[in-house]
Length: 545
Image (cartoon, rainbow, N blue to C red):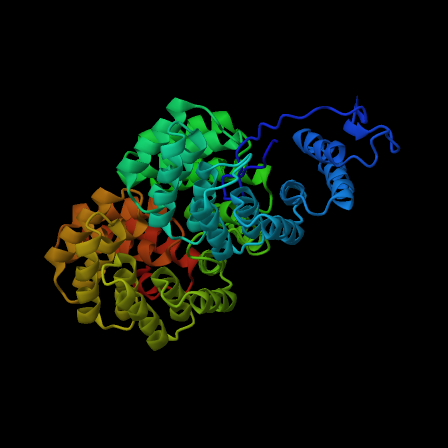
């Protein structure tokens, strides 16, 4: 019989090899095998109906099979094997409770009946009763009798699947290993062992298991399992830092299953982690093409659109994620609410942003990133102490969280608490040495404290790291002007104005340094530009002729 397989742990059974005498009642048409004659000459023959049940099951005509099984049972209710066959057929029809009852009938008639316990095991799994499934499989193995079309490898495998779903990963690996003692080159068993090992973060063993599955290339019950092996190999390669090889493995997975939304999502996550946001975006969009309500792809699509500053599109993706199929990662719905916080903040919808942040930390109080992002709308709402408390909560959860230190420093600086701000920026630098925003904000704090030389050095570090950062160039310009390096200040202001030509304060300060250099006409033009942007810009008004 052909079994139904799923890499996510739906129950998988081994092929049957039933010796069946095909009765005259069978016929073939475009719809497959069917009952041709409802009044065959062997109507009261138990063996006839029992064989017919198995033949229909072999042909995957399970509706007809259950009719034949029931006809056989009407003739002889004391045969344990027909009850076991009926249990298997009912499992294929996803009538799991009835399948268990049928297996129980078989066991009542034949207590030492391992095959019936296997069907019981697989049906309990269909009902998400994994502990009961484990008990049934273990009973099959303990009895080790009357396996018929099942065998110990199947029971160990099914035990492993249940253990994997219950996240008892070591037990899952033990079960797969026991199954592999019976059938050492079974690709399905090896691929599932690889899956468990990746979850255990044993990447070298996982890679070996996946490689063995792919090299053996036999007994794949589901064609997508080969793709799963490549995907799990990619996960293990990621765990050892081999991202290029991980992407190559995912390419192989997608060659095997080009419509696999999980593979596309995994590829997107690796690319996103590498900062390749445009490529990650394409991968997530491809995932959604094949499964439009796939929450995990949609929430990551929202995140990468936030990184690309595509906020209206990010908003749509986050809302779709929250209405999707609820396939979350370990963070759960908090991730979507957290990304929605970022989106709404950048869209200027601050009250809504705070409400989203509250939902995020409500779902997951230990989510440091959500506490950090919650602090931003509170800052914009001028609820400064609450904002600082939110950033502090993030730092209590993750003391090495550079962005939370940066945001805490920014709020303190905006309150004029420059010493405290500098202390926060110094902490941020420890954990994000190459973050230009940290250096630029540190420069601002140093300048506020009158430490102009160190402010200039910090700003120059920022511009080297991020040549397109307005804040970095603006900070460098102010610090350079304060140490008397007017030429450097002019260059820095000009670069800052290239990046942000609509900033009135920058134009006014630029005018002042031009005056100091004796460029009066250019200075007056700068003041005029500042006043066009903001007619009340005080520095420009004071210096305008």
